[in-house]
Image 1: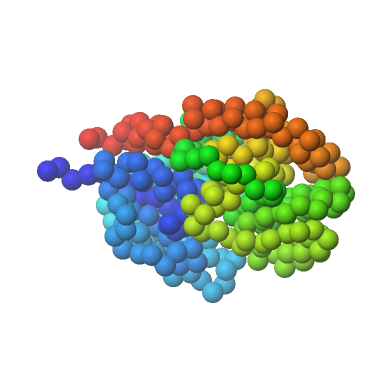
Image 2: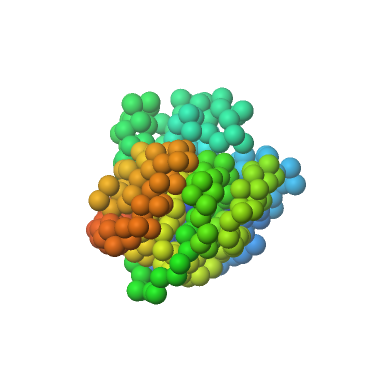
Length: 362
């Protein structure tokens, strides 16, 4: 029996996934593991599971105690290990931030780069002081990949204009395991990392503005920023808020989504949010910011948009949605239908499979 082609993934940081790029890689592997032998490069800050797992091999490097350098270190040692000690048929790199290792990887390998967010104008406060690093990535290194993929149609056009090279568009996906559940009377916000650009503060401020008395669930890691955590806790003092923390059990998280009366997604920047897609896949009505990343996925017929960062507009939209819940459910059904057509993982994986086959002789 002919051995399966070997593909290494760098940039996922560790599986099992709890959002973002890791979820994309995880689902590509799940659907294509019978055709390819996958190796995932990971760091111990994100996973403790190494060796042979569910259809793939995971190599885990010990994280640095100096956390600010850990991601950079992880990219470098992954590239060194792949080039010096392994023999793959293809490297699949995730994130623009990792593009600086492409010249080294290309000494031996064909490379695919999936970009999960592009452009320095949208950098978070944490990374803004390193703007020069990301600008160098975009100017010199991204274009060196043999194939570039963007999860956002808007960003695909932006990347092409900057690097003068064709970029493929493959969106993110979800599983449609939605079953009708009895709705409970709570609003929900969720993010993997609750940081400032996710705008949980805008959500809570809007609830305070209308003196909201109902139950509110907030899921996500609130430990990313001490100052922002304090702001969120202060805003929640007069509200009935339950903080769930980072919900790693995907089935439990989807259950929370599906039982919410409304899901609020106020983020001020996204390429293509997995959280937004997952919430929509449960048939729960959504109010979300009118950033391009969201409007590239859904229309006014499918979700209720509010003006990004506008507390008063979000407050009025929450009031309107609660007063017109039947119309919100009609929107939610249309959003679910769009997910069914455009964002199922088996179709996404098939698109990646076609690109893999461009570079691997099977």
